Length: 227
Image 1 (cartoon, helix red, strand yellow):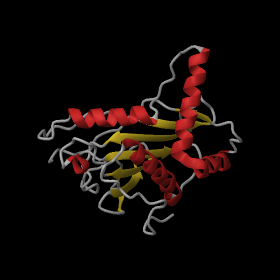
Image 2: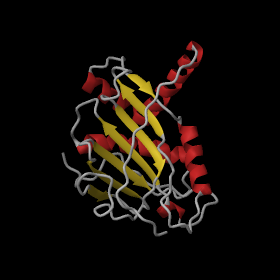
Image 3: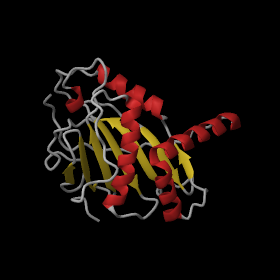
């Protein structure tokens, strides 16, 4: 599928909705479970260590993993693979972590979306980052991309070919999973550390999504990712 992949801004939409105390408690518990599953024990320990959270971290989520899977499947099935238009799949936040729930300027955010970029996109020419990003191909099914956006925030992205049942053969390349991590909470600057946590999340998501091609996602980024 050929489609225009020029500069496209990404907007992070955050919201806190009013609800009853019972609903809020259930929602908080579900969000914590989702974040902890995505991060794994090592990721949660890393967060606590970097923030001094001591269990006081606020974990939120707009989508649990089941709803994220449903959103991905729905977007793929509704897309016209003969179209040359830019798809508008939206952003699916699955985990956000803050020390102060009212301070969105300091948070770790994880999203998993149907990608508007095909897997084989030349990200050095088509990018949402301020300058050409660093691109690392891990395998025929997994790529890493990171760089600063126009606001100066570094975005870490993983692209995973994920073939879903009943979709065209080209779907895994044309609409891969895009995982994205941004971190203004911990002060962590090491791409290796941040990609390690994003890759763990991607493994969880690929399993939850039931990718029939079973992409092999490593535990850590390759040695070429430094810092």
